[in-house]
Length: 247
Image (cartoon, rainbow, N blue to C red; front, side, top):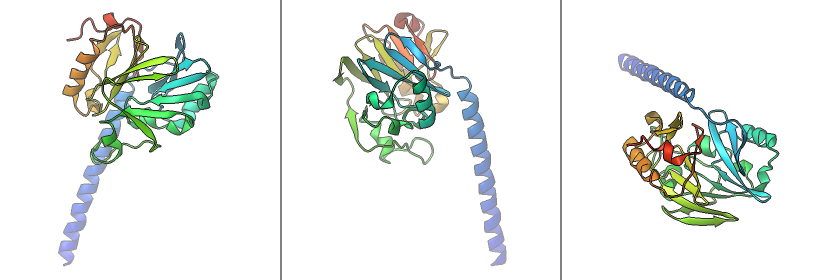
């Protein structure tokens, strides 16, 4: 009996050490990759579009008269609040949040936008209702149960903004891009930009990189778009040139 208990404890110890080693490697890998990201500083980017820096990620604010639409919601509520204060923008004036997907660095500060309707795609709901896991045994979570689900190719009119919704699964099952007023493309983590050219997003963070590549192909054929705004790799003001080497 005693020998069996010793074997059990040894076995549990080995499993625990293995888990700690895997966890340590994973965190090292994540931190290394985060350092390669190049988000914008908090500023007015163009016209009535603002970037809000939250460490390694951006959310964007689109001004419509005295109100705003947010694309994503940031990684940390205190940081987002501080950065928005630099722009003299009141979070209570944000009337809609368009989530590109439900990862925490895009949705963690949702509670800051108390007056906003929240939008995300139908397939993305699987990650927040427990139907599908994001990493290992873990799903995603957003701080609201009151959200509006969007279909691929659905169109919205929010104030003076006409919004076309494009499903681009791969990074997550329900990753969604938004084309605003036929000109501005907000893509979340669908792709990255390096020296102004489109590249695939970091595979380590994708759930299905092959689907992600197919989604980039679709995003490369949207007529009328001039600007591309990414969550982690800045923006381009030349859509055609950004995709010129994409295959």
